[in-house]
Image (cartoon, rainbow, N blue to C red; front, side, top):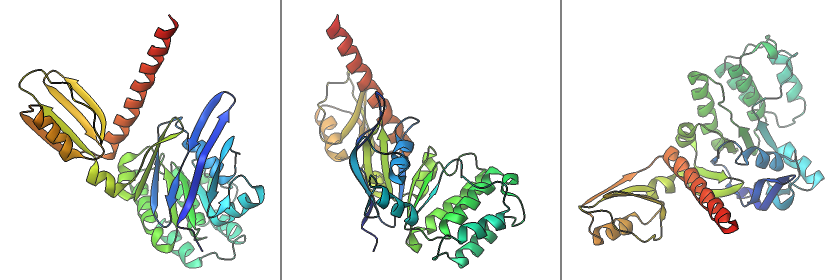
Length: 312
């Protein structure tokens, strides 16, 4: 039986010498949903995925995948038997033909699904007799997905699956991922392509500097996140930060606020302080990502300056 939470981590931490790549990370991924795992380069996504797969050991903290502990060698083997992973390098045997690689992989799995194999082979138009090393990057990605999904895994983990693909290949890949939860497969994928994530994801996990900065369903994001612009007839007053305010920027007679909730109360606060023009509009995932990362950069720079001032 698949647990309700297929991935659960508690204070998961990974250090490389003095550098902390993952910092007390608490993740929770729901079963039979598509979760977009977001973060800029160096945010800790790849290290997190490698710990979940048992490829590297945590420095501290713990994690459970499909009910198995990631820090236990025997249980880690069970995790890898029950999940499928498609990384950027794909890890395919280039000297084999497509058909040979499919037969080779099929021999390891008793629950292999021949119907899924045949359907994806036709949909992806993979040439059975061509050597894997002669395939384009897009074709190699499709072949890796066929090998993964034909096992009907409980969990499919992908690291930048659309990297370097043409628009048609991207569309085919996204359609494949969308249909996976209906077959009982949970999808957990990292990507820099925010518009693609926004199209197919049910849940969003965003990390920065190894810490969770956003954990919310896409539906909640669309319902709650708003950009609120307040215009004043005189220089903008100082406004207090209240529940839901993620970022506030004041310039001349204008105040712009990024809110994660409580938009009506924030707009009313502006009205009470004399705002003559109020505009409340939804924001997309790209705007939230940029605003969140930039705000954390600003806070880090401010803390750095304060530390320098304290030493003078």
